[in-house]
Image (cartoon, rainbow, N blue to C red; front, side, top):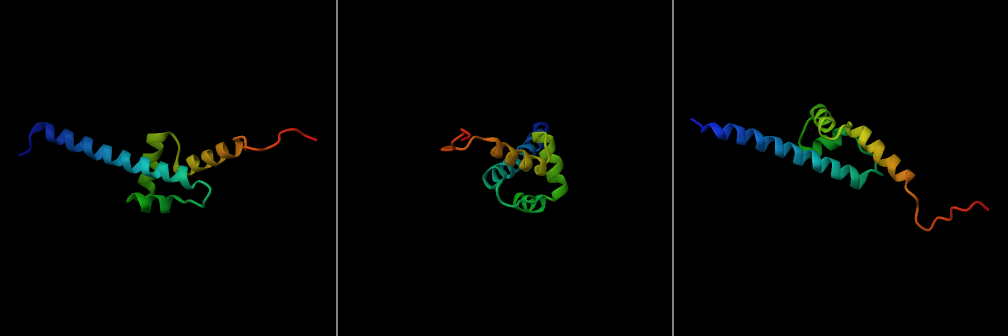
Length: 89
């Protein structure tokens, strides 16, 4: 028989492990956003199925993985480029 606190600790450990996997997925998206990325490949790398990855990612970050990739790409496109002359001649 387990001690009463162990079940809570085990549940918390699982939750933290899932957040660590989601953080690795987010970090991969941030590193490789310019490359073609699909949810299936991200899920495979995280050791999860695509649908649970999408729902967990949305719950943790407020966006689906696809929407996060799109937002990251749009953010990069809006960023000013260094050594870019903004004057119109």
